[in-house]
Length: 509
Image (tube, rainbow, N blue to C red; front, side, top):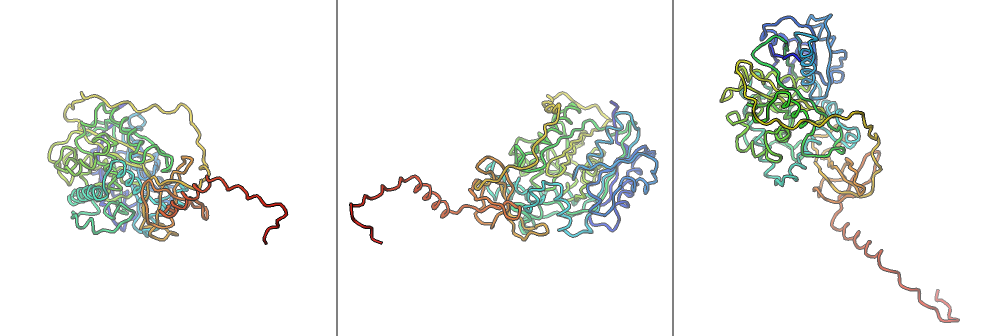
């Protein structure tokens, strides 16, 4: 397999833009070509999540190839939800590594800000499970439920969790203030964070990445440059929350990271800085654990101790991340690669305190269902590769194991596994909306909508029923539990024997 190098990178400023998606992609390409000694392109790989609904245009690879003057060349669109840009980068890497092409253009882009927040939320929610959507679940709602479960598993008080999430938001906004391409270029204070409204408890406005327009581009080549792609990895996971083995980590990231580390011949300790998919602040914490940077449950401590700050031993999201740079979903995966290449070259807006030789980018598709890890390194000096390698990823199945498509029948009672109160609801749902993942008496998991937002707690017992095709739960109150216990107790008491009647005596009517 041939070594793949990065010849040039470029991106537009992220944020609200009057330009069309095609115009944004043309601008990013122009900047990548200006950054590259290579001007000849043999193929185009494009990562876009959903232009059909965001812009009304399909056949987007052909449209952009025509606008770039590349008609006649192979042009391919790649889509893996919010990791589409990273997926396009990996496909282009494989094309060059295999010898199919010498010079390939990778593009990622999305145009989103012209739509209303509710419309954009609906489009983004289409990547999650249909049954969960029917209950009113959105991406922020599911992220919040994962965050609440994380808090419970690692015994964090609500106040402690809020402090950790606040530290991530403050760090990334501070880094973004130094990035001329970032959507938000202003640091925030603790007071700013805590005065922001809840989007879906425990996540506030400053815990969620914004709706953004933008595009990013990279030129990959088989000709040696100053930066090489040394490791790539991809992993997938269940779409629905109810099918997961863990609610506090993303197996897809762990698989992708193991493959990338093994290909690069390194361990997590040899990464100098990283761009991590922080669509939500809690996802940065979880992803740094999944990538092997910190032990499970300690990612938040690392942020609080300054280990992931710009002057820390492992800077994470020195660009500001998706949280501050912005998140035009199809573009983010390529933008991360643009940022790490610039960081290695010393041309990034936020300057690292020490020289970096190797960097990692991690991109998440959907709710952690199609994730990518990419490792790039400088080629101007030999790098040490003598630390123990991580274990090899598990082998893939030899043949598909078809799973059932219909969930099991809903029982009448269950227990809350995790929950949230959603304040920014999709169309057709009124806020505040209580949502919970319920485990019923048979051990099956269901997403359900609550009758009210009171008494929500992991472990609480609930009643379950279906209303209009939606699962609905009611938290058992103390009085309900007492009545239920009395009913069970009385059912065990044997009935009194019938009283004998005296012969010849009539019953009194």
